[in-house]
Length: 446
Image (cartoon, rainbow, N blue to C red):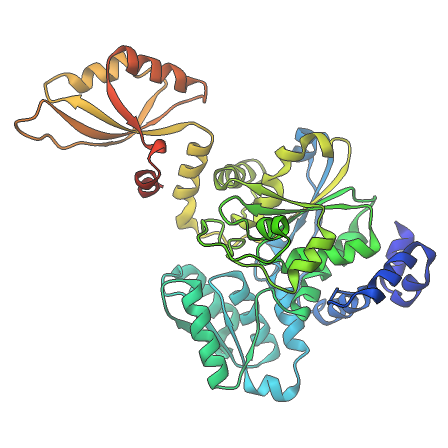
């Protein structure tokens, strides 16, 4: 490990060493772009005095749970509370003076906007940021706080795609420079600087590394550096189940555009990965794993309750996936990148709800109650156990009807209690429909 640390700052020697000869010849034979160690090292020199060197922390609780040595790379503690500042600042610092004077443009609903705003402030250049109109006010305030007078925020359209379209039109008509969130060489190299810090801070060889994947900027930058410096490390990309853009692209060996996605894990929910990022990820990632959004929510709550760590949905993907690799990582050294902590507090109720539903601790039913006195009392006494709790009950009595539907949400104490609840409803002859079986109605509730 000491030898690797020395070579990190002497990249010419690195290419001459026999250990890396095969990577030298492999890189020379590539026709497409692949981030080089020297390029990522140069990016690190540009950003190191601007970004925070985030800690690589050993986590005792996770290590005990998975019987492994698990370290967290805390990019959630970054200046703008995500890694995005690294790529944005690196790209902008490489622009010519003439380009800087023209100003920069981006479209983003979150972390990329904050990273660009902070970079504009540091470099004292004009930036115009397009954000969807429904963007939470908290995120808009954060962008304005980081950018101050150097940033103009334009709220437009209902979706990111709407904001992206307006940003493209504005950029061309005003001859400004567009700063993409992931599909750019300098963005990729900037995000790759995380790898340098990880390898310098690690006390032992890293067997596994788990990286959140959205458009592919972080995974392609960090993955490329590790592929050349620590080739034995198995790099796993992690995507939300509802937005598997990289997973599907790798599966079909072609960049695909998803028709619809679940936007809940907003920092990693994209319909299409970058065309520069895809071939790099294809080469450096061992595989891409998918994590259900409900599992993400459970992990957010667990990390907060047990570690007092606040992360956004995409930021916790690298930990939420560990259950899938429990056997493989046992006894190994593992690094999980916590990519960000820009979590709006107003989302916590939804996060809790999704977690309960995923864990099988909350269920919604449409129940037909007889329209007579005492029907609800009988349900409470004969169907619910002492530990069952009604959390939702919506019912309006209709005249001239024998029964009427009620929306009922029931929270149980243990997942296993569900079967008993269903058995008691069946024995009582209650007519019900589990709303999970009706996706259209179910989505209205969560």
